[in-house]
Image (cartoon, rainbow, N blue to C red; front, side):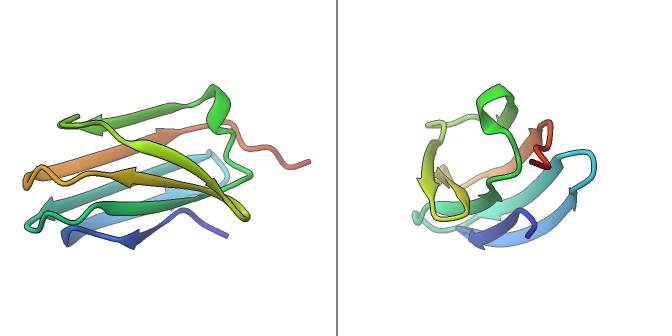
Length: 91
């Protein structure tokens, strides 16, 4: 399973994942007040991770769900980028 956007507050501009390197990049332009929701599979080690959201705005909430995590990002009605860089656990 790959990281993917479950819900975007506006228009998804770009996203790509590199499972082997444990990287995921998302870019979108917010145009609603709804939160964006990004799914990250559990083999991404989020405990020792770099998760960068720009602009940060109100930040984000990380929620454990079956099979991984969801990153819940409140809208600030701007163009946003989310970068995730992890070590992947193949255990």
